[in-house]
Image (cartoon, rainbow, N blue to C red; front, side):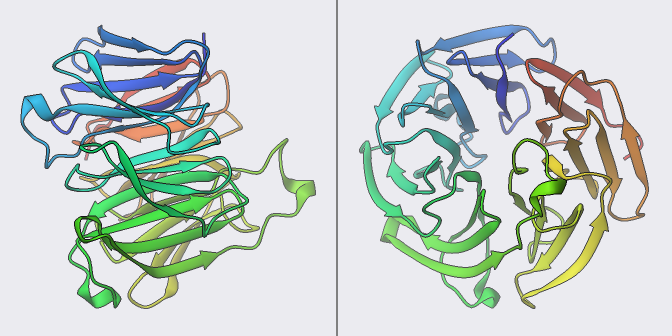
Length: 314
């Protein structure tokens, strides 16, 4: 009954992996929800997880990168059922992790706000970004983009969001060790009297149906989702919410957004039509929601309980 901290999917959606406060990384069959592999690290919590990207399509390239409370990062080979690499890029707990689009680089963020850039092939950390220092990194997302029109060069576009309501967007070419700031968003912090026991996490994601849009939630003083244009450098749309968001996922296929709340509610928003559906069924805060790549399934997590939803009609 240990808290589940992340759910990630293999690009083919045949498998998913979860990580927990008990230090485990579990790999499941999505079709049968049968546990296939468990990697266990003793006396550590596993706080974040990333599955190697679609560019690593060969079976032997399937890996999961996991970040732990002692600042270590481990790389697990799925076909070999083995740990391939252990690194120690952080002195504080890892709170977010992502592969670059080509799978050759791993970005990791920690509780103190540092982002480390490491190369699994060499086991070396070759860059540390301290721009968010002082607040935990809540989210890191990396994507391959053609974005000459954002005024920066590189092959990857990636973002980091920290708990002090800041989101940074970067263009990078890691093989040439190049990294350039594209945009920096600062949101006003919510007034403390409105806030539950702790501040909501800063949630940010690239919009899967419009590559120039950034989607942010849990930021600012209002309960809302903000769509921000990286091209026009301005907010294009705001969608009001009933509460502060604590989790968010955007469906790559349909224009769907799932949002989880501390109030044990899951909200599904059709961003094309504006239609909204709320779902109960969780016994605790909906701290994670994750669409599978095909968007046919949505996984949500409340503490140690994982619910699997079928997404119909899209």
